[in-house]
Length: 310
Image 1 (spheres, rainbow, N blue to C red):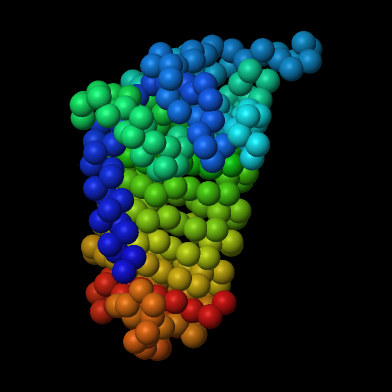
Image 2 (cartoon, rainbow, N blue to C red):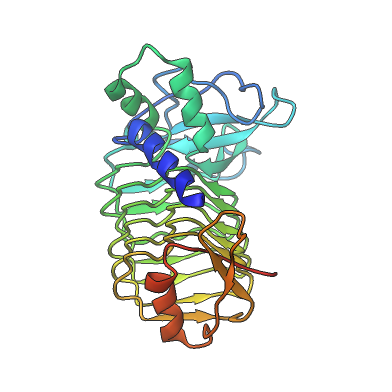
């Protein structure tokens, strides 16, 4: 069942992201060519980005950010960078550049597999050392962070990027973003969020325990709302589910105590099941009633997986 995946995810997070405080920039790609291993514990420092053609003004960005190389399919060509807090961990305002060393900044934080790789390659490190290592690749637990500027051109916000950023109450996600990783905003201070139209999935626990989150706008391409995606968003009173959505994971709206209206743009054809293969799926009717839909998602069918024929 998908909820078991979330349990595993949370267990990994407990090991890797309890304090998520790391710094390093890779030197070589891993075997898949997607991410480099950790080799430099000091990371790359920033200030202003040199112009590409010598005519434009240098692009300002926050000092101390950590930029790590991202590699193409051939595993050797650097195609851009992902960025983490680095030494800027305690800044109130962070500006990310659109380019670094002549190449685009493509991601804020990175994927879960990268952090798993860190633990495998550094068995000698204790828990605190690992937490200190992993954190600068994200903005996790940047407790002072109130504003972050993410430039157009960034295509992903990675795994655990802003966990427990309690002072971060709003964020503008550029329209270029196509993916937001699991737990990206878990337990942060967001009050409102707008998901860009290119994002196709709200990943597991993306907004879990965002207790102040009161307004959510889902983009027109969202097809899946993952396990515990909005669990414990206790200020959320209503949400619109676009007709692009065809699946909703278990506990997606669990403990959303004030959620009274869920507006389904496509209220027909939904089925629910407690089995991953949907073998005992039963039809759900009445979803054209916003109050009834909210009750189903937060109570009656809260622990069920939902699916609809696209």
